[in-house]
Image 1 (cartoon, rainbow, N blue to C red):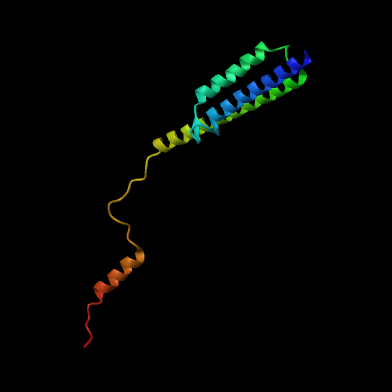
Image 2 (cartoon, rainbow, N blue to C red):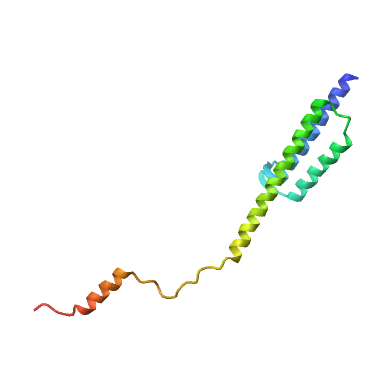
Length: 132
């Protein structure tokens, strides 16, 4: 009987790690192994984390100490990463909004003339003497 319990414990931990990898991939923290690209889907990541929360509630009182510790650590790590990604999105959106609302400087149609160039042109126009 103990062998079956040990097997179930290993399977449970594998299931939790599978959900962890899925959520990390959905948050863009890991490459999608099928496409070999970083892809983000924060709604899917939220759903995956919510499933782990539900699993935590449903298994309450049925996990060994090590299983519970591992599960709590994984769930906490995922939630912190999710909050970090959401905050990054908010900051990027705020920067984009700020960029859009900041008017661009008005560009003059006439180029700004260099003071040295103006002086040189002035000297050339007054120096109309030809050597004899």
